[in-house]
Length: 191
Image 1 (cartoon, rainbow, N blue to C red):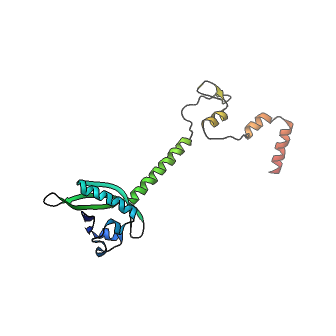
Image 2 (image 1 turned 120 degrees about the vertical axis):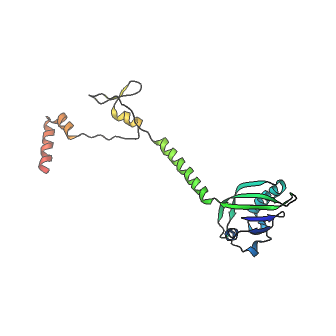
Image 3 (image 1 turned 90 degrees about the vertical axis):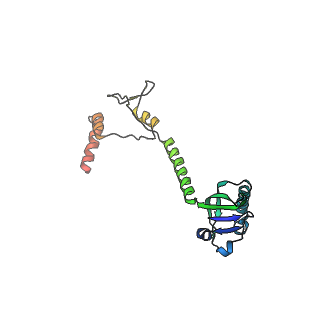
């Protein structure tokens, strides 16, 4: 919390203000924003102070402040013109609210939302009832065409297939073939 005269000189402030800027009361009283801030930030603060002193009323805006250790922090300035008993503006009083962590959380949240939206856009899912032939296992698509199950699933998801044959199907297809019987006998002997 701080207060200034109409020329923009600091008249007083609380301990948190001193600590934030790393200066003592003696080092700050009578100084202006140009004495304790980088010039680019000081110009913005001064411009806003002049507007408030000229127009009166209240003012609130986001900006940045450089702390005693040189760290740039996001803040909200809330200021009001103060008047004497003749309704003449005599200066301003203000507070600085550090919102750096809140801004960082908001940025993190926005980044996560963007990443989730991207991930959702890449996800393909199968849902609902799939009409499938009980004999050949083909699936009927929305246009009424029958498709191999592998092709249908690959088209509607990110799944890929490799082909092999289970032992039951191998026996059913090749069980009576001489070469197959010999291969099975060799496998059983190697066990």
